[in-house]
Length: 399
Ligand SMILES: Cc1cc2nc3c(=O)[nH]c(=O)nc-3n(C[C@H](O)[C@H](O)[C@H](O)COP(=O)(O)OP(=O)(O)OC[C@H]3O[C@@H](n4cnc5c(N)ncnc54)[C@H](O)[C@@H]3O)c2cc1C
Image 1 (cartoon, protein in one colour):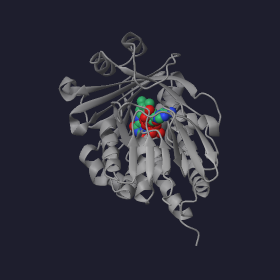
Image 2 (image 1 turned 180 degrees about the vertical axis):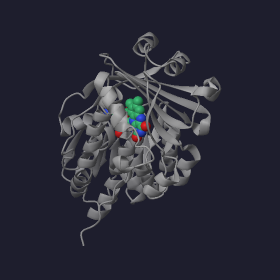
Image 3 (image 1 turned 45 degrees about the vertical axis):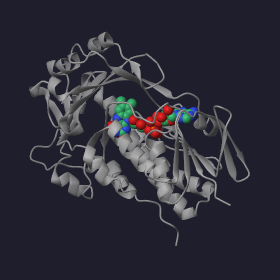
């Protein structure tokens, strides 16, 4: 009898990465995405050296490198005074050497998505289904039935809920209600190169930190585009990642900041907005033959730029665990969450602290600038980010 496939609910970055990693281990995978098209919406994604290790494990390094670009520095600026607070030279030889030869990159979300999608389409073991919404599931002896709209029930050996921040699968497994609304909103837009004033163009990821606000910008698609993300405190709440923003509210929030910030914001009339949410870290996110992955398992604020990086790490670790247990799914999921919960919790918690530091005001802002100021004459020190960018060691079989 043919073994039952692995079911993946959700065709975002995490779902595709999971399908790919498992297919590469020999599993048949059926993936269901509710959207009418498998696609990722605009804007940029930063890629740490930790995720380049995962691209290597998935055989995707060359494809990613065709689309990604490598900024010279991560720079933090004070949005009130225009002073540089600190920088990490992520484009330097010293950085690459410190992190095992792996680079720091930026990529358009659509390009990253396309690389994953093409790799999935090239895998005969993966079946991709669009316009298929998962409604519920049922676990029966050694199988899972995923109920889809249109009354179909897909039968699988196990189910991976990669269904994002508002995960239905999580509601069954963890049951911790709605996500935590952070009170921060992100507005994002992408500018063509020609519309960016020359004096504001730089091959750096720049973060302008202001009281209760920040603006991030960096070039994308090898310099054809400029990615802008503006974040501010607000009590608006709307679900989804594709809602139009209020340009007047945005301008008011940044009105006391440096001219460089306002000139960039003024270039854009149409913004898409995200209400930023996360959750408290969970110790367990699997039950029987069902587990979670990516934002469904450990949604994080984006201040470390690691949500998608973590989803891809999850996928590679999950597949490694399946190999170790020889596809005993209950054991696989236990091993996988044991390997992942502390690292992903650290990203969730540290992202909140980073957000507080970016948005500091008054004395806290001054202190932040003092603490982060580089020591005169000292070589760049990467140890503060080493826990993250050193990446992970894949679980190994017990000998
Ligand atoms: C402003 C901002 C900037 C960011 N920048 C970065 C960055 O620089 N680097 C980084 O690594 N991360 C970044 N992130 C985080 C990153 O975008 C997310 O962590 C990542 O996209 C999560 O992927 P996912 O596949 O787990 O979830 P999602 O991308 O949310 O995918 C879930 C999918 O499941 C589908 N789905 C949901 N419910 C169902 C259902 N019932 N049936 C079928 N399908 C369903 C959805 O349609 C969706 O396609 C950023 C996030 C924000 C908000």
